[in-house]
Image (cartoon, rainbow, N blue to C red; front, side, top):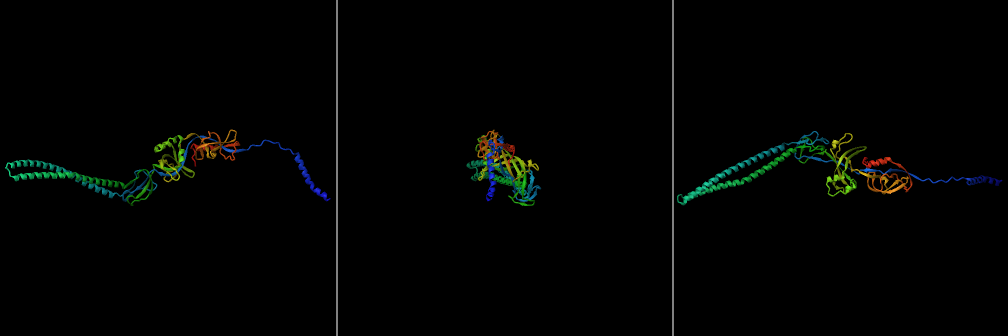
Length: 452
């Protein structure tokens, strides 16, 4: 009985093993088919051929082209102040901004005029004296001639013993006295030119002092030298000013300049290859302006709002930053206050941090690609059979989010934008054209979309 029970316990196991053996021997295998090929889904775009516009972006502070520091040139009390002599006020050229008490300078000018009149009278008196002495000299010369004739007659009579010898001596003394009188007139006339020169020199000094006094009178009135916007004002009516004391600052409104920094390669990229060969050392600023042919815009950003001013390429500064090797380019906005649009474009004022965008003329027939599509000068393409291929490209330059292809692509190739890693040459690709990315690329390359 015990053996029968043990056998009955193993019976289910034996039955199960037997069933498995029967199933394995009688099973039907599935029919073998061809293995499925793996397919990768990647974003692509058609390599566009565009009219590429090279551009460079720099940053700088807005500064007026003319800044006038008003300084008192004469001392005195402020007697009149223009009501608009306040920081931030806009004033026109030749507006009288303040006046200093001129009484002392007018009195000094009056004293000088009186002294000049006195000196002029002395010169006139000297002229009269010269004429008088010349007339007296002529009379004395005539008298001398008569005296000499009388002396000759007397000498003849003395030789004939008709007149005494002392009479001859008296006649000779008369001749000597006449010669002495003429000599005195000659000496006096010889001194007149030097006396006149001294008086005229004194008169010139007085005239110079009068001119200075007249200038000082004019300096008591301070006018705006050009259309300007006033800065800090440090004066008030009744205040006593000393010569050289700073009064206020005025910023010209006719033009504002922004000096921005650019890397040398940025400026190089703005020049077409044929124009680079035209560059010569020692070119004038006008020659550089013609060579670059830049369209310049100044832009101010504040959050989502921005304002733009058209500008002109004015000059390149004379020095290079020793640390960054950056080149400083100056762009000028003409008449910024006439370009104000309330709520849209404010006044371009001193101290604003601005972007300076330089754009060169278009270069048609240029192939461009997104930066992300180029990896170690290689790009991945999708051929006509939908398979992955690679190509080597040479890049001319990089700008914003794209690069300019110099050689390696003709344009129109389907270029992979997604990361194809692992990239297997010839693998099957399901391409999805990214039209938005292609449109943004073309807009940026042709200068219709400004980079952030």
